[in-house]
Image 1: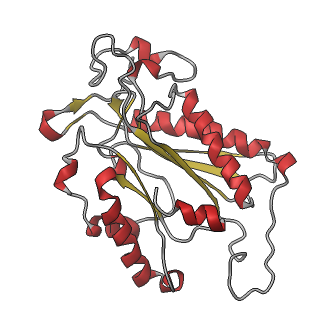
Image 2: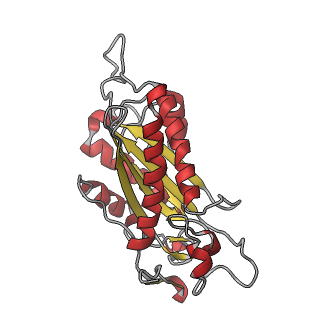
Length: 273
């Protein structure tokens, strides 16, 4: 995930967060800079360190064919809008696989009744996990639906591959250290679906708040920001965990069976089962 060093250093993030496949990070990074300088020159004044994250789709996608172009990224940015989010085989999630089922993009949200009544939204690009690990609402689904697992061969149950990107958004006013705490809680939602974050799994999370938009402005001699006190933050932690869990399940349920590069085929999770 590019741009993280500046987020950690400054506690701020300006511009879009983009997710693509592993070998398209540079292409998308370049596109974000070009798009921002043209569409939001006020944000691009001086320099940019865009946030671009990736997961590997090389089983279903000809990843070395370099099919993602700057025009694709700019088209996605131009069409970003409020409202329902497309899930499954869309965007960066098109070629992704999780728990050895077809997977991709998923999202979910929670509205907290405590801590001021704020919303927490989570978007995932899910591409992780071995089949036997999958559990949904505590049920050992992956141990029951064992057929058509593309990577698990024989007794090699730990042939886990892939990664997940989790983006946590909220309108709750939080300070940078509180957002880091919230990002960590995404791991708990991931674990509720069965993942154990294996050696080859790049599990990367980022959290941001849309509150306090004026705090980083340069013209201020002394800035101020409101924030939820730590003793009232638990409902927001709970929301991250539960929305992350549901977003991963939604990515599984929304995805459709795909035959891709070199004839590789990955089945969608069977809804009736």
